[in-house]
Amino acid sequence: MKGFYLAILVLIVACSPRQSPDQQKINYLGQEVPGDIPEIFGSGIISVENRFDMGFTMSPDGRSVAFGVAHESDPTETSIYLMNLVNEEWTAPSKNFLPDNVNTFFPMFNPSGNKLYFAKSTDGSPTDLWVADYSGNKASDPQPLDSIFNSSSREAGHGVSTSGSFYFTSNRDDQYQCCGDVYLSEPGPEGYTAVQKVDALSSVEDEESLFLSPQGDYIIIQSWRNEFESKHDLYISFKTKAGEWTRLERLNAQINSQEIEQRPFVSPDRKYLFFSRTSVIQADGQVSYDSDIYWVSTKSVFRPYLYNDDIDTEIAYDEPFQLDLPEDLFKDVDDTKLSYKASSADNTALPDWIRFDFGNLSLSGTWKSKESLTIKITATDSLGNSGEFKLQLKII
Image (cartoon, rainbow, N blue to C red; front, top):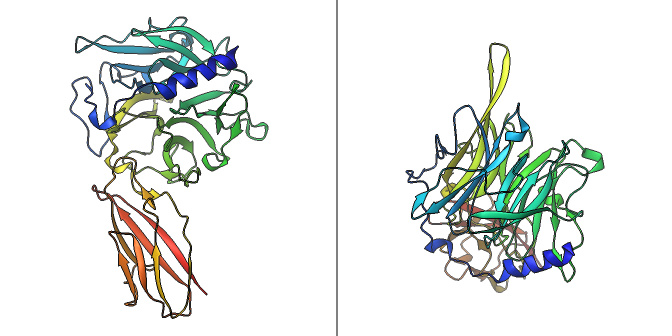
C-alpha cells in the first residue's frame, strides 16, 4: 500500500504547477537581506540566543517556514516549529501544527508544498524519515517512510525533486557505522523499490544533511572531510547532461567557518542559502553548544560548470579544421548569459593559427602542430563567477 501511496506522491509532485523562481517575491520576516557575509536569520524569533536552532525550510510559495529546535536536557522539547504568512503578517512560531511533534528534526517541504518530510526518533532509536500531508498551514497524518528508506541506523538529511528522485543520508553502511553517506531512490511503476549509495557524493567521513534543488540539477551537502582545519562544512555538486554528479566543491570560507555548518536550504527564489552554524563554547571547564540559523546571498554559491563534454577531440595535422563545441558545454543554474574565452592550458594565448569564436563556441584554423594541445575554455557569469574545462585535442 505504501508503494502505491509513494507512486501517487510522485504524480502529485511532477504535475503540480510551479511559479518561476525569478517571479517570486518573498517576505523574509521584513529583514534586510544579506550580501556575501552570512548573517543570523530571524534573531529573537527563529534564532534565539542560548537555544539550539537547527534546520530551516520554506514552502515553495514562501508563505510557510519551518525550523527545528533541539533541547539537550529534555528530548521531548526537541521539535519542529512553524510560522505562516497570514494577511501579510507572520504568525508566531508554533509546534502545534504537527501531531506528536516530539523528537523531530530536519523539516523539508516537497517541491509542490503539499508534503512535509522530516526526521523523527521514537523510543530513543536512531532517527527515521517521515512524511506528513501539508495543507491549510497544518501537517496531518504523519507516517514513517517505507522500510527501504528507514533502517536500524540513522537516516537524516533528505530531499525530493519534481521528478521524484529521493536523496537522503544514512549510516546503514556496515563498514562505516559511525558515518553517514548519501543514498538515492528513484520512483518506478511500483513506487520506490530500491536504494543505492551515491559514491560521487559520499566519503569515508560523515555526510549528515543535504539540500536537493527542486529540478535535481544541484545538491548541497554537509560533510566532515577534515579540510581547512574545519569541522562539518557545506559542499556543492552539479548534475551533468550525462546524469553524473560533478566533484563536490567546498563553499567559500565566508560560508564555511571554523564552526560547524550544516543543514543547508536554498530559498524558492534561489537568492539565499540558509544553514545552521553550531559553535562549541568552552567556559569554566564546561562545554556547551549554541546553534543559530544563518542566511547569505547565493551570488557566490552558483557558478558555471561543465555540463556537456561530448566532444570529438581528434584533429588532422596540417589540414583546415572547425571544432564546434556543444551549445550547452557549460550551465549555470541561476544565469543563462555566459561569456567565454579560450587559452592554452597554462593561460597563455592560443597559437595564432587557432581562432576561437566565443559567440558560436567554435575553434577553427589549420592545425600546425604535430603535438597534442590542451585548450582551456573558461565560462564566466554576469556576477564574475567562472568555471573552466580543459580540452585535450588529439592529432591524427
